[in-house]
Length: 182
Image (cartoon, rainbow, N blue to C red; front, side):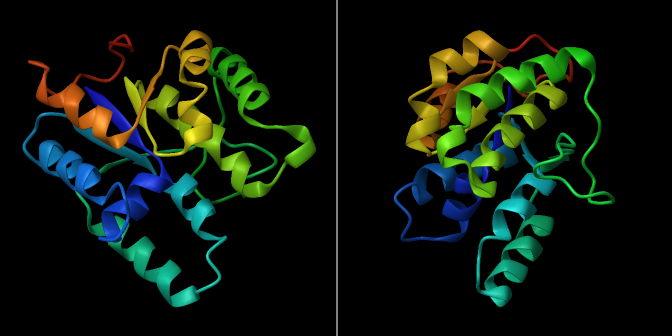
């Protein structure tokens, strides 16, 4: 099983007071034990952290990520988020169609912000990586999980749900390109 973690999970792992810290820490332990493959879009995380006004904390969080046993996957190059030379890549036509559908679902044009533009960025990174799941604690994404699954085949779950999924599964990490879902 392959899980792409969004920024909320990565921050929860670093913040013991975060409500999701225990579940995310367990998720990291299960990943380290080989029960699941944990992935992150390094560029999506870096773009999210640009909103952090404390430069020292931002630098510490980026350094922390580089020390974690997480697979790094590229993000999708998009004109609204990406910058040349930061590691994002062009999409295939098939994934571009799914990305456009996810953008329409997750972005409310009336309240567009660069931070919100990162949400579909994580989802598209998961598609590109052939991931089975996206793990987040953002309620607006969790609320749309059924529609996300219908559009993309990705299953979206909270950190606690991801831990339960891994604990009850007999599967280990999947090979890239395996069919998503579950």
